[in-house]
Amino acid sequence: MENIGVIFGGRSVEHEVSVITGMQIIENMDKSKYNPIPIYITKDGKFLSGESLKNFKAYKDQDFHDGVEVFFKPEYGNKNLYYVKHNPKKLFKAEYDSIEVYQKIDAIFFALHGTFGEDGCTQGLFELMGMPYTGCGVMSAAVGMDKVIMRKVFESEDIPMTKYKYFYREELKNLKGLIEKCKDLNFPLFVKPANLGSSIGISRVENTLDLSKALEVAAHYDRKIIVEEAVVNPREINVAVLGYENDLRVSAAEEPLGFKDLLKYEDKYVSGSKGAKSSQKHQNKKLPAELKPELEKEIKELAKKAFSAIDGAGVARIDFLVDGDKAYVNEINTLPGSIAFYLYEVDGLMIKDLITRLIELGKERHSERAANNYSIDSNLFNMTSYGAKI
Image (cartoon, rainbow, N blue to C red):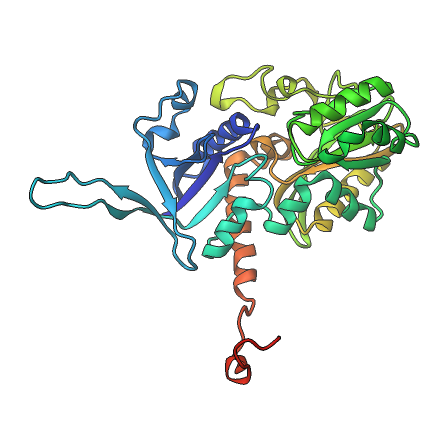
C-alpha cells in the first residue's frame, strides 16, 4: 500500500476551501490501494500531520494539539517526511533533539488552493525532491493562476475572451491615468486580483467612480490587477478537463442557476454546505446544463484547447461566459474546489476513481520528467581560468 501525502490548508485566503477539499480527498481515497497521510499547512506556514488531522472536527474547533510538526528535506530522491523528536535533557548528560522519519511518502496529492499552493510555489519543492504529485507542474500552475499571463497564452492560441487591461499596484498612485487607460473598455467591467480565485477581491463596476474603488479593493490582494469587459447578459457554463497531453476527458457542463454577474465566495462554498462533505455539488445549478449541441461541442473543444495551451495535467475546471451562441473563456482553475468530482459523477466517474486516476496521472507526468537528461559530462572547469568571463 502506498502512502499518499494529501497537502492542504496553506497561507492563502482560500485556506478554508482547501481544507474542505483535503478532507474530501482523504475521506474518499481508495483505502485498498492508498494510505492517505494528512499534511496540513497552517495559516502561518507550519506543516502538521497526525491521525487527528483526518477529522474535520479538528479544523472546526481549531484544535491541533495532537498534530505533529513535520517537514521535507528538499533533496532529490528523498521522499521522507520528517519530524523533530524532542528528548528530555538530563542533569549531567544532555540528550539532544533528533530528526526522525515520520512517514515515507510515495506521492503527493495537491489540495492546496490559491497563493503558495495553486501557483507553482509548492510544486517547485516537490520537483526539487523528485516526488510525484498530482495536477499541473510549476509552469502550468503559475500560468493558470495568473489571469494576465493566462490571457496572453490564450490569445496566442486564438481562444476567445473578453477585452481587458491590467495594471500594477504601484500605478494606483496615478489613479486618473488608470481610468484613462480603461476608456476603450465598455461598462460593465469586472476588476480582479490577477492571482486569486473563489471570487475574493472581485468587483463588478458600472461607472468610473465604482472602478476607482474596485481597483483599490483588488490591490489589497495582489500587486497585479486585471480589468475585464463583462458580458451583459451572460450564462455561466463550466466544464472540467481530466488527463494529460492528448489523452483528455471533458466532463458534463454545469450552469449555476440565478447567476447574473458574480458568484460570491459564500455562494460558492457556504450555501448548502455541511462540513467536510460539502462541495459545490450542493449549489443551485443545472447539471448537465441545457445547451444546443453545437454550442456544447464548441465549449468542450475550447476547454481542451485551453487545458493544452498551458500544458495542463490532472484535472482543471474551465469557466465560460456565454452570450447567445457565443462562448468566451473566462478562466481556467488548475486545482478546482472538490477536484470538480461532481462534474464527472454525471457520466459515472465517481470520486474514488477520480482520485485514483489523478494519482496515476501524477506518476505518469513524473515518469516523463524523470526521463529527461538534466546533466552532461563537461570539462568546463579544466578549460576555464578562475575569474575568466564566461
